[in-house]
Image (cartoon, rainbow, N blue to C red):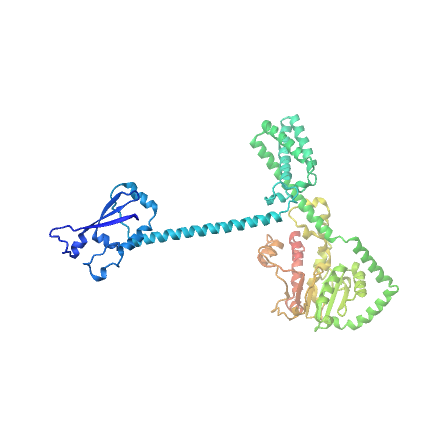
Length: 564
C-alpha cells in the first residue's frame, strides 16, 4: 500500500527497437514503471510495477490505449485521495521494512476495506450503546426489586432456596425409624451371642427413640430431644456394627423381620375387612330408635297417627288399580332398611317428569314391615304411589317350591355365615369376607328371582337396589328395546373385574361345562326386567334347576351359585 506522501513516476520500455514515440499495445503491457515516494522520515522509497499491473489500479493514463480503456482524468488525484485514506499503521509497516515494496493494492479492495472498517466501528458503537441500555435496564430492575423486597421471612437461613420453606419434611423421622429397625436386628444378634451389655444399650436406645417419635408424622412433630436420641442411636449402632456385623446374619434377620411384617399386614387387612362389613351392617343407635318409634306408632295409632291411617286407607283404595296398571312405570324395591328405601323412592320421584305415573312396590320382612309402612304413611312421596308388602304374606314362597329356602335354613349354611363373627375365622385367607355377610341368609336377597310370581299382572318392571340414589328421570328406560332379552343392566366388566371366573367355581365340572369364565357379570343395582320374556324362557325354573343341582353338592358350588 502506498503511503500518503510525495510520489514520482518514471517510465521505462523494455525490449529491442524501443523508442519513446513508438509504443504499441504489447510494449505498453511490458513496460516497467518505477514509482518513487518519500516516507514520513523524509527518505525516498522506490518500487516497480508493470504497465498492466499499474492499469488495473486506474492510476496511470496511457494515451495510446483504446478510447474505452482510458481511465478518467485526474487519476493521480484519485490515487492520492485513496492513498491518503490509509492508516498510519500501514505507513509504519512500510517504513520498518527498509526495502523496496512489491505489494499491490486494488483500489476497489481498498474501498471495501475502508467500508468494512467504518461498518465495524459503527457496529461497535451500536453494541456499546445497547450495552449501556441493557445495563441501565438491569439497574432499574435491581432498584425496583430492592424497594419491593420483604425482609419478614422467618425461620429461613436462605431466602433464595425454595426448599427451605417446605418445613413439613420427614427425613429425620425416617432416619430414626431406620435406626430402630437396624437396632432390633443387632439387639437380636447380641442376645443370641450373649452380649448382654450391648443388648441392654440397644434396647434402651430403641425405647428412647420410640418415645421421641411418638405419633409424629413429620419432623416438626418430633420431640425436642429427637436429634439427641438419633445421635445416641447412631453411636450405639456404630459400636454394634464393629462388634457384631456379619452380612449373612444381618440379611437373614432382616428377611425374618420382613416376613413377620407381611404376616401382620395380612392379618390387619383381614380384620379391617371384617370390621368394615360389621360396621356397614350394624344399625346406629339413632336409626334403631327411629325404627322402634315407627313400629310403636304403627301399632298404637294414637292422635295424629289415626289421621294418617285414615288418609292412607282412602288413598290405598284409589291406588289399588294403579298397582296393576301396565301403562304406568313400576319399580321393585326389596329392603329391610327404612331410610335407604325412602332415599331411593324420594330421589326417583324428585327427578321424574311425571311423578304421578310412578308406582313403587316395596317388599320387606316381617320385622321391618310395621316401620316401613309407617314411614311411607307419615312421609308419602306424593303424587307417586308406594305399596309396602310383607314377604311372609307370599304363600307360594315355601320350601317345597323354593329350594333356596331349604338351603338357607340348613345348619351348614348358617354355620358358614355366622362363624365370621368368630375371630378364628379370620385366619381363613381363601374366603372373601364380603361374601360371608349374613345378609345373604335373608330371602330378600333372593326374591329378585321371583319377579313374575310377585307381579303376575305386569309386563315390565325396573328393579332398584336400596343403595341407589337416582339423579335423573328414568322413564326412558321403559322405551329400551331389550331384543328378546330378559333383563337390561349396566355392564361392569373392566379387564378381569366382574367376570364369571371371579364368582363361580370353575374347578367344578358342571360349572366349567355350562359357563364361560370370561363372560361378564352385571350390576344388580338397577335392572329392567321383561316379565313376559321371563315367563317364556322360564328363568325361575332355570334358577330352581341350579339350586336343586347344588343342594347336595359342595358348599363352595352352592354358595357361589347363590351369589349369582
